[in-house]
Amino acid sequence: MFKKINFHSGNIVYDDFQIDPELSFEKQMYNFKQDMFQVDFLNKYLIDIGWYPDFDKNGMFKIVIIKEYNWEKPFYIERCRTIDELKEHLVKCINIINNQLDI
Image (cartoon, rainbow, N blue to C red; front, top):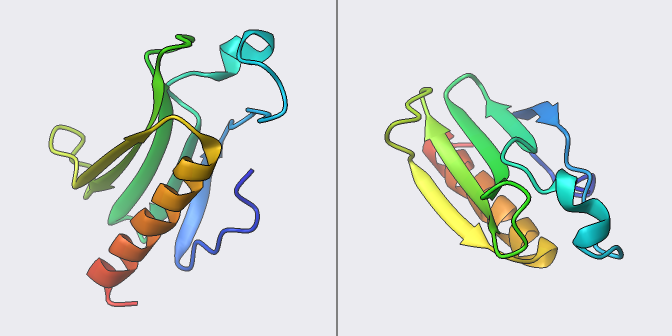
C-alpha cells in the first residue's frame, strides 16, 4: 500500500497492512486492527499505524510517532478515516522525523 512513499532513512520493520480500498469493510473487517505497520528511523523514531478500536467499523486509523521508544508520551499523533488521508499523514510524519534528524 505504501510502496510509492519514500521513507528516506526509515526501515519498514512491520508490514501487515492488508486493506483493499476497493473492498467493503465487512469483507475485510479483521484487517482493521491495531498492529498494521511500523517504520523505524535510526532507532530514534518509530512511525506506528493501526486501526482503533480493532475491527470496529466506526473506528479510525491512528498514526503515531514514537521518539526513543517512549510509548507513554507519543511525539506526534494523528487520526483519520480514509487511505488517502492516511498516506498524507504518513508523508507528514516522515517529514517531521526528517526535520528532527536534520536529513
